[in-house]
Image (tube, rainbow, N blue to C red):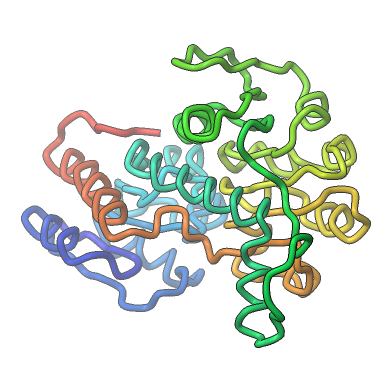
Length: 315
């Protein structure tokens, strides 16, 4: 069986795949083009796609009888794949839950601390050679310990963030989620997202992409307190970017920490120009250990398909 890996992955992952498949690794680090998407369905038995490889309904419509029967997605999020359309033409789809949880939660905490304590702004000040030395009222930020955090989406990642906030920083935890969660720490479910936004000092977005587009919109941002910060480690399109820019420019909220963007990799100049915004280049899972584990999980899904076994992580 022929397997396409759509972007370079750690060699441990590629070597594991070669035990079962005739592997082709696309060396380009950009997302697949439309022609490449269609060719992959025609020319390979299984595909290991990555974030941004847009397997849309139109792509499947253009290749109604694909050779490929498996999309072993590299990542927990799969909103770049039209799963219904894929299954309609006979493809299995899997993802890599669990492998990304702790690393993504760590990035959320990084953004919370950087945004609250103005770390990005301070680092730029030092590099600019404009820093004139310490004084008592210099760059006063938000003390994070003991504050109230709101988690939007209380899945694996949301709970991991909440756990760090409670046990590490003594924060009060509230959350907005479709169902109530049983946790090993106090956490209050709030029925309305606007109500949650109005209560908290930090609002952290941790929902999947897809049907949650613009879940955090102008109304939600208007509900937030003027000293509050918004953190997004989910998918860029979950936050209405224009509304966020307006909220930041007007002082409606105090700051934001973003690892994802609505039209990634495009980042609006307005966001880049503001000192009260921390911008990271989608670093959520960017450690060698985590990316290797993600890749091995994706390969495990593909191997199960090749050997006609139950898929470990179907979607």
